[in-house]
Length: 341
Image (cartoon, rainbow, N blue to C red; front, side, top):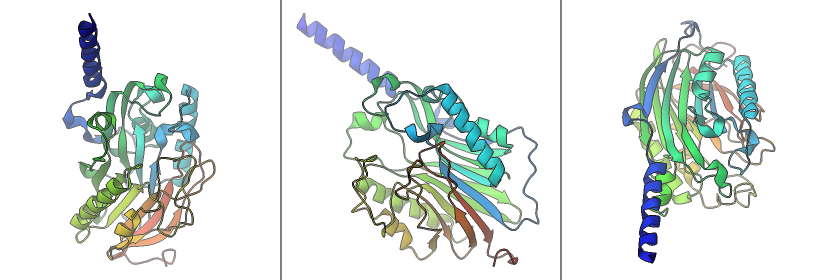
């Protein structure tokens, strides 16, 4: 009898493992270029200054992201409206998202990518899936929110056509068990090429490992290799959530809201900052957590021989646990206006 019971339990566990970790969409839909039916005009040829926003949107769960709290549908609807109002105010030409849901149980099946595009009239987009599961044991300590489909990842919205999109999966922590990694998200570098008047702009949208320092450093090397692939031919912007504080940050550990992470020995930013072809936009801006920022986790890098930085800001908004970064720039082969100087 005990053998039969043990066999039944084993079968149930194996069945649950394959059911919970299995993908729900085909592999050819993990990276897609999307055309939205809006009447948003293209960026005019005479425009010389451009605006980019990068935002870990935290699936619009606000300050409750990664916390064992049951949220309401009205929270997500209100946060979506708050964010789209900000977009209407800033009018970025390009938006890069991390942790955006494409119709997930945890965010009441609101397709945050499509809803944002349609509410703010973006004509072009690209999405890259990094979490496609029926069961996610996260956040820890709150099992009732672990069940239900999650379809989430990274995305780009653009006023101009997206010519190319690629989803590059970065290395997972080798110290994790295979069961843990089966349910863990894929850390991605999403690469897009955007046709922009006389230029093709390459944007590399990343979301690096949060909890394992050595893996994050390996991912930084991989991301730098991607950057080098494009830097000589194209203006390139590398941006996103690097889950890393700057090397000169006064506090690099003992953050009570992020106990699993110790940044004290992290060299991720050194790896990127020491590359002579790369420049970072404004290292001193704090971006996390949005209710009371204590550190910077989000960055914008670019090849300084092709891109002229004008301004970077971090608008204060609590629809996510991060602040967005907003980057105004021009291309260096364009004649600078008085505003650019």
